Length: 284
Image 1 (cartoon, rainbow, N blue to C red):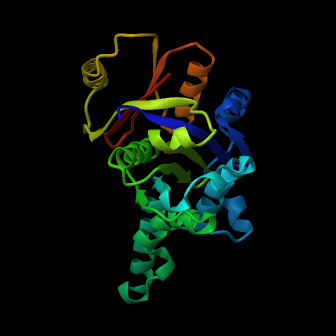
Image 2: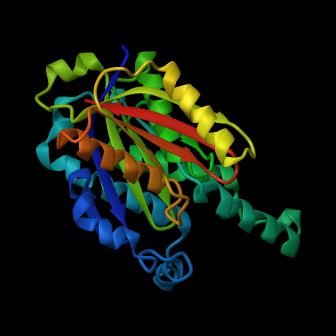
């Protein structure tokens, strides 16, 4: 199996719930620096007494909620649905709270709710529990690229026949993104069309290299994929306060370009300040 079908791409950012086809209508909102401002938005949420782990869990649930409307889950075996979750804040914020608590109160009096591993895994686990998904649950935190890496890990699980369907999701302080992926054989048994496909992908640590070195490395990597047919658009994700959600928005933007016949494939590139590179091809 060379390419993995994409069945859906959903978002819940701030208080907005939308599908990838609606991204263009929201572009001005998404570019507004006041939208989900990390200095103000978390303070508003704290006023209603919600924890980071709760906000991320509820944002993920809100992102996938519209998918229930078509009764898709009634047609598939939920024991073969997995969740792979990527996030920056799910690990970084709890680690900082953990260290602060240990320094303030001593290591024997650390708040158990601040344990990094427990908190980082909670949103993905809750998504499975709330929806009855019974297969694998995986959480990872690799900086801004965590969302794209979640998609890559989901593709690997499908290729190895560990699962039939995967929600590859990303959750941050200010929202969530979710991509639903399928194996080829289950797609033949359900009436739900693929919007595009994930084909080539790569994730690695490249370190602190110059912009010219970055461009050279990316060019060589893409050339190794031998993409000679059709029109290709490449987009390098910005490093914004949406963290791992930003590359996931670019993922949705690329699907739009393909469906609107503006491109045959899109290549999403995420290279954050920590030197984590993730690059993924979406194609017709």
